[in-house]
Image (tube, rainbow, N blue to C red):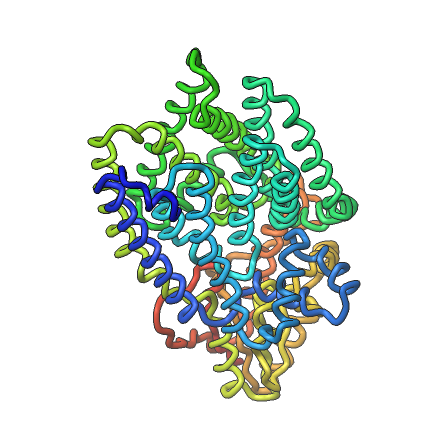
Length: 542
């Protein structure tokens, strides 16, 4: 970057673009720090990862990894962070996530330098100011560091395509190993990037580069060998998450991910995607009469990689069949942002008027996005710690606490230290992480709530109170809660959703039939709370 700045022929527009990119970076930095100050307690996905990483031995950690979905890298990073003395409080743990989020800004700048487009203006706005990234990328899950490693992997492989020397091959191998061991979606990106690399190799007849790519591929696959062994077990364990997914659901959730910073961004991402598709298609099909040129190679490399990655990503999510979440799209969003940047640079590099328009529109969108997302940077990730504190001084030791459903109990178990006994719906005795195996056992039982109902009845009869953490599903007069047979169900197979729904209705029906008072308790909270773990608290008296 310093070499670029020393050039005398840099125009004033370059300095304006650089200044705007710096301001966007500073704005993104402020957002990350604000999130750190307001995110509060860890929510269940984070607690699960932290609990697994902090188990007494590596052997126990490795065994427990079957109860959560990320590949191994995140757990080793968290274990190392804890070993350095930073795992003893929420704020210290969250600092790791924010460091990763801020590092993502830095990798965008380095990627711009390495791939030749100098200033990552568009990608800084699309990634640095997007709530999907600064919220879920900063949490203690693998998505933020997964995008960071993916970007490093892409430009490292590009360097090998340009110059297949041993040191660059080694660096690309390390980047690839770390990336694929962080999130599964990076498997799709490296597969797509290999197609782009092969396209450049074939066009330029630089077949000696294939040897370097083979070495990178062998190293990457070797690093996944232990993971392939545990993958079938993980797939069977996670079948309770498989809801069945169609393309409409995938697209709707993708729209939610890109529109987290305002509905205008749906059209911004759509326009940039269409523009990039057209521009790369132009490079793919035109007759290249000139000699080998780095710019042409880069367009071919990214054009093929982008097309293959989008198709692979859609097919993977459709086959995954999980209930879609917006953070599933962070990897492809990060890759597309880089593709948009390269296409815009290639198209407008020598067109000053177009660059001015791009600069003006990007500046307006950046300011608009910052205003929109600033309140979201103050989002709390859970309110269960607040509910736990309330229960510690309000609930008597003879009362009973019910957490509906069992997954938020992972968070509740971390923060509740009162003397009142508590149970989950269904009754899961290990609340450290996602015990999907124990949940499946409950799905197989004929009356999984019977012990819980007996305890509620005994508590109410003795004149004590029942506290319910979770949504109360009121049934209309004469309505019955229903029941389900053991899985697999005809329509939903092993998916856990119908069982959560029926069990919650059965519990609510019993409470409505036996309680005289059902009152929601308001817990004050400043600022927004994440929809994924914002639970009500009910007081129930007989």
